[in-house]
Length: 273
Length: 273
DNA sequence: AAAATTAGGTGCGACAGCGTACATTAAAGA
DNA sequence: TCTTTAATGTACGCTGTCGCACCTAATTTT
Image 1 (tube, chains in turn orange, blue, red, yellow):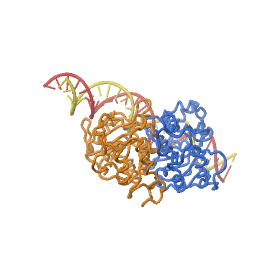
Image 2 (cartoon, each protein chain N blue to C red):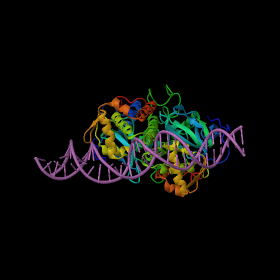
Image 3 (cartoon, each protein chain N blue to C red):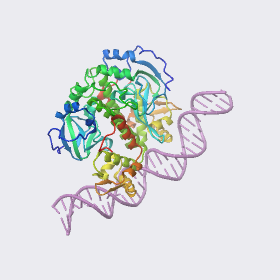
Image 4 (spheres, rainbow over the protein chains, first blue to last red):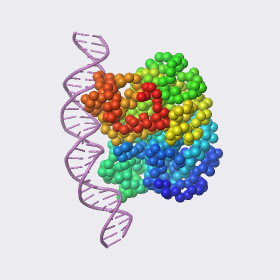
C-alpha cells in the first residue's frame, strides 16, 4: 500500500489547496511546513486499516478519501468522506492514536502528509494561543467556527472533528431514512465537490460498496439518473452532466452536511463550489 | 422545558457517578465543583433543540440522553446515546457552540450541569497540562486513551468526542446493514448499560422513533424478543429479563461500540457493567 | 484481431419494512 | 366503578431492496 508516493520532498511551492491549512496564519504554516511532505495517492490506496496506528495524517488537496466501517461478515459501508476540506487521521488531535475505521483513497490525487508526532508537537506549541478556550463571541452570527479571521491549528482541527461528526450523524440518518437513488445522487455530489472536474473514475460495483447496497441496485439508480440526463457513464467513468438537477435528485442530507461544515469552518474556496 | 430542575445548589456529596468526571484528578474536580450544579432531568425534557446555542453541558449520572437528527419532513432518528459514561453538549470543547442535533432525555434521572463559559474556562486552565499533546506512549497497549492514570479535563472531553464519533459511525453502518430486531436488541442493551435496573420506561412508539421505523415494526420485533424470553413488557415498561440472550440477539454493533469506548476511556465502573 | 477480463443490464422470486386501518387491552381519571 | 385515553396487537396490500443468476458490452491483454 502507498506504493505511489512520488515526492518525499518538502511542500512544493504554489497556493495552499487544503482548506484547513489555508485557515492558518502564515506563522503557523511556517511551523508546519518543514514537516509536511507532498505525496501522490492512487485510487484504492489504503491509508489505514481498521485498528492500525495513525502514523501519518493527510491533508488532501486533490485526493479524496473515504472512511469505511467494516463488519465481521465482510460487509462494509462508508461513514465519512474527506477531501481538500479536511484532514484524514485528524482524530489524533483528540488523543486517539489508532484508527478504528478503514480509510481508503477514493479519488487519486495529491495530498500533504505529516507524521503524527510532528502534528502533535505543533499542536502543543500553538494550543490556547488563539481561541481554544473562548468559544463565545468569535465574530458574527451565532458564533460558531472561524469564518473570517485566522485560527490556530488546534482550533481548526477540533472544529473539523466536529464537522466530520456532523457528516457522520447525517449519514446515519440518511442510511435509514432515504431511498437509494437519493443517496446515490448525494454521494456523487459529495465527490464532485471534492474532486476536480466532472468525471469520476469509479465502478458501480465500488459505489454499491460505499452505499452498502448491491451492485444491481446501483445500476438501477444510476440508470434512472442517467435517463433523467443528470449523469452519464461508461465502464468505470461517471460524468456529472447536470449538477443542479443532481442536487434536486439528492436528499436534503447533501445540503445539510455542506451547511454544517460552512457554519464551523467557513466556505471552502475554489475547488469546493 | 427543563421545568424539572430541582436542586440548583452546588454538587451534592457522595461518590462521582459520571465516568468522565471520575477520571479527573482531585485537583481538577475541585476546580469544576463550584460550577457544577445538581439537576434532575425528566424523561422527555429537551436539553437542546436543533440549532440552539449550548448554554449548559450535562454530565449525566442516572439520566440518559439521546441525540436525534430530525429531517425536514419531520422524520427523526437517534444518532447517539449519552449516559453516565459521557457528556451532553461536549462539542463545545471542540469549539462548536450551537447544537445541530436535538438532545432529549430518554431516561429521567440525575445529572450535573455546568455553564458553557465555566467549562471553557476550566479547559483553558488545564489544557496542555497533562496529555493533550503527547498522544504516544500513554501507558500500555496501543497507547489509546487514558486507562490507568488520571487525565486532564481537556483530554477527557476530546477522547469522549472521539468515542461519540465511533458510536455514531457504528450506528450509521448498523442503520443500513442490520435488521430491525437486531437493532432493537442493541438499543435496549445500550439503555440497559446506562440506566439503573432492568426496567425501561418507554413505549414502543417512542422506540420506533429512535430506530427510524414504524411503530408496528417495533411491536413485531419486540414480540419476537419477548417470545424468546429475552424481554417482557406491558404498557410503556420494558423489562430486560435475559441480558445474555439479548446480547446474542443484538448485532455486533453493540459490542463494537462498547469496545471502542473502553479503548479510549477505559471501562466505566459499576453502573456500566 | 482474437481472447480474456471487467463493467454494466436485466430478470425473478423472496422478504423486510412501509402505510394504513382497526381491534384490543392496560392504565389513568372522574 | 365507569369512562377515557394511551399502548399494544394484528392484518393487508405495497414498495424497495435483496440474492442470485445470467447475459451483453466495453476494455484490456495477448
